[in-house]
Amino acid sequence: MLKGPVQGNYGAFYSLDVLEHIDPKNEDVFLSNATASLEQGGVGIIGTPSLESQAIASKFSRLGHVNCKTQSELKATLLRFFDNVFMFSMNDEVVHTGHEKMSHYNIALCCGPKHR
Image 1: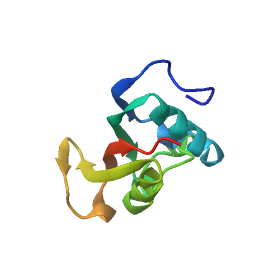
Image 2: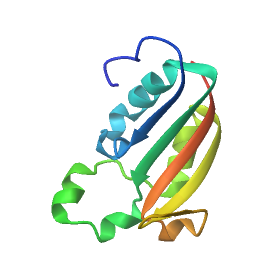
Image 3: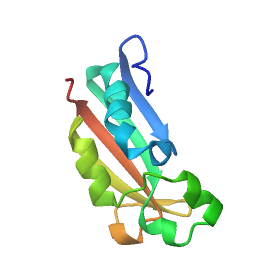
């Protein structure tokens, strides 16, 4: 996704456990390419460990997680590429809309890509 968009037009994409491994300087390229192949009414589902979760992550895990964000930061980033972003939190196997600072994993449902 850093070299270019996927060919074709699609109604959706999902990216789970990827964004935290993308160098922040390549984040816009990654998200631009991901949204470029979406239809106008398309959606994206993006999931990533929260920045707060990194305090209890192993040293090995933290080495590869170069781009974790708070839920608010993730939403602000994604709103540059989508008209609407709905945030969900996940702890263990429970998905909820609870207090974002206690979220171990953030899931964003992104709607209406802003094609550039």
